[in-house]
Amino acid sequence: MFNKVLIANRGEIALRILRACKELGISTVAVHSTADSEAMHVRLADESVCIGPPPSRDSYLNMHELLAACEITGADAIHPGYGFLSENAKFADVLDAHGITFIGPSAEHIRIMGDKIEAKKTAKELGIPVVPGSEGAVNTIADAKKIAADIGYPVLIKAASGGGGRGMKVAQTENDIGEALQTARSEAGAAFGDDAVYIEKYLAKPRHIEIQVLGDGKGGGIHLGERDCSLQRRHQKVWEEANSPALNEEQREKIGGICARAVQGLGYSGAGTVEFLYENGEFYFIEMNTRLQVEHPVTEMITRIDLVNEQLRIASGSGMSVTQEEIAFTGHAIECRINAEHPVTFAPSPGKIAYYHPPGGLGVRVDSGVYQGYSIPPYYDSLIGKLIVHGRNRVECLMRLRRALDEFVVDGINTTLPLFRELVSNPDMLDGNYDIHWLEHYLADRS
Ligand code: MV4
Image (cartoon, rainbow, N blue to C red; front, side, top):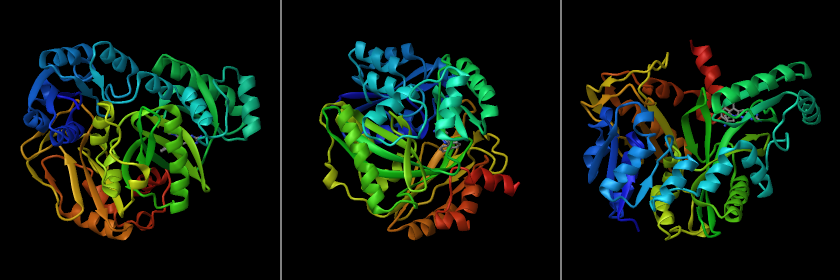
């Protein structure tokens, strides 16, 4: 196991990683920009290093500063968390060249999954069901028209280097496809420096269901069930739950088994998430994330597995702590991402937290690095914490979530807590009857 881990992140996930390290007796190094010197994880870490001014490109994305912090402190591993450099293959290579362990998958697997065309090709080879579409990049309007005619309109043109909704264009009919292709390619070229695009059948009302996987890098691989992340606003997940209200036990085991075998076949190392669209009882692979995800706690709550602990074990060569047979799914969990934003306009609301009272009680978890008197900086994303609630079933979980939301006080800044207090009493939400477009429609109808 590692002696000292540098946590190359900030906010709630930095604290989350620090907690797992401490429980394993690993020394922790916090890095922070000048805007985060008062952050909770900096206070709790064994050591801390200021790595630069507030802008991410000068601090949390600055590989030289992170390497220097490793040299200064003697950290033997880096945990990247999510976002920032967590899916940067070059960073994984640079750490490897310096003899520092990158707590995550190999640079090769990061690269494969970061290219959405390569990811889809690999997924298909591994037996994962994919969305019907082009076999690779599409370069000409003639090719695009032929493929679209084969799979049927509407179709979606996606950027190979995109992801998270960036660089997507819908073509409703053959008349649209020329412009859609040209626009998608030029926008992808501008945004990602790569104008490669591919085509898929457009799924109109899917759910977003993702499977958590772990691989030991030696051919072992397991799944830890699914998370339903269909409630999103502008490609930002808002509310995630495990299990999905839409799946039954048989479907869970089937798609979970497919993903576990894929991870085994790939020789994947570490935590990963296989993302699907789910429509009319069918799963369609769209992407694989080669990092720990924001919403990992709902999986932890129903499996009782500490995913960061597993990441540290795997990266240090100890392998996973459990076998597939030892994993049981107990109850139901829901996570609400609480942002420092106005609950109606979603305008960012940085500033000082005048009063902070998080909820507690059985089955209530708050993953957050904020505290009373803490000032939310304006430089980073607006996530201030995650409220995660567990119950023996979905009804009990919703009742507990409603109580916890009523108990949660954050004064001095705007937060999205009021939005969740609406959602937790909404009939569609209570029925679990929502797809990826539901929240945008709800918000549009509300205003
Ligand atoms: C799709 C799709 C419909 N059909 N692909 C958006 C982000 C990226 N993960 C893939 N995304 C989508 N891909 C096909 N063939 C609809 C979306 C999509 C979406 C997916 C999941 C969650 C929220 C979404 C919001 C808008 C569009």
